Length: 307
Ligand SMILES: Cc1ncc(COP(=O)(O)O)c(C=O)c1O
Image 1 (cartoon, rainbow, N blue to C red):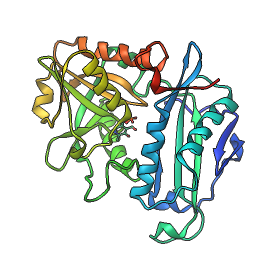
Image 2 (image 1 turned 90 degrees about the vertical axis):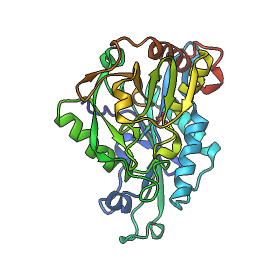
Image 3 (image 1 turned 135 degrees about the vertical axis):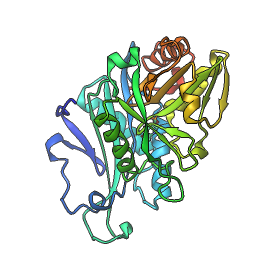
């Protein structure tokens, strides 16, 4: 685990402040009750300067998460997009992970978050491949979690709320303690949902599938990009549920996410997946890599270039 290295500034409640000054009180409401919604997006170097990948989509999901939680964000889509751009420029960085977050701030305690002021921040730091650079090539070892993914009757998975990540954290810790790299969570119907911070895809007989949004997942922006890549590769795509045993018999399995990128899964619960080669995953990785680094005209509209 690499500690976060301090950069120059953080955007906090409408302005850029020095990194060290971006502080909150220990009685910040959201810290106690998990009432915070957040995003994760990346900026990469391109031949024409740093480029934010799918910035409008990430900010749209941020505002949708806030809406689900009755959180009033005092900034517009445009203002938040601008704030991300200003932050990257101010820190003079080309490759970074950006973390917009809104939370119930210091005000009142008790379970009604609307009685505390909403605070909004955007931080960024340098973050390599979440599941490891090497693993992105060779694949990760995953285990099916004993924890069930929470569903929209309890905590809506389509809102990227901090509270959801207590469920993710339980699954992640269990997997790591058992010697695996990552967990795979089933939903309350026993079907495959997603990883703690990634969506999942299955390849079988050249057909690519991923669980539908109704299976209790976050609608990933990377998932959406991969669905497009699958179509552009001329492969058949299905939004369909699959079972634990259909993972064991897959030709390829892969995680997708802003933090993890596109990472093949080489083993699930001691069963090797496919032949240990990832021909389709590699094609999708190549498209993704070209898209995020501004090497593809086809996906150039997904980049917000910072000049
Ligand atoms: C639970 C969960 N599922 C899926 C994803 C992948 O989403 P995205 O591709 O938008 O990063 C993430 C990451 O944000 C996540 O936390």
